[in-house]
Image (cartoon, rainbow, N blue to C red):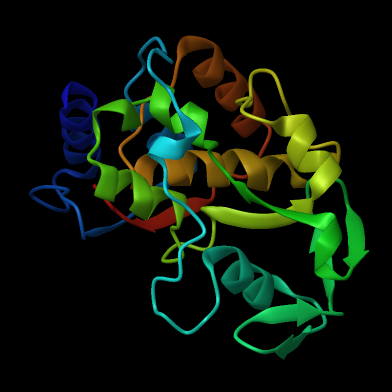
Length: 216
């Protein structure tokens, strides 16, 4: 709760005087370096982490397609065939982490831009099960989940930008920007090494505006 309060307080200060407060459900638009500066900095704590605490690949709209399938359908370069409830075959995808095209869905993982373990370390340990489920299946912001090659996802695992960067150098600015956006959306903290890595990357990138709806 302290991390969430600190994040909202920082955003409130950042946005003043253009808006009186920043609260869940509100949209904000700020330069990415300002969004990074507004994130609370705190040491991480993985005590008690269990991946099963984040129920995922649910079918929120009950259309037969899980969160995984929804991301695949949304991000396909060439649309796959869909049969039955939601069996996907064929299709083509682009994996920006490693600048690779992938034919068929079997070679792809759906990556949480900010990994589940990282979110736990950064504040999600204090969330309710419903909040963790919403985070793990966040289809309301296209930057939260991304289809990438299984190899690149497993290389990244639960690392943050201080220890892992996409092998495709041309994606690193977008990666850092999306990381900051997701952390802003969910009022998550960053640790000192993560803050330093993001600052170093974003100082070499255009200071693009971040537009995001706060989830918490």
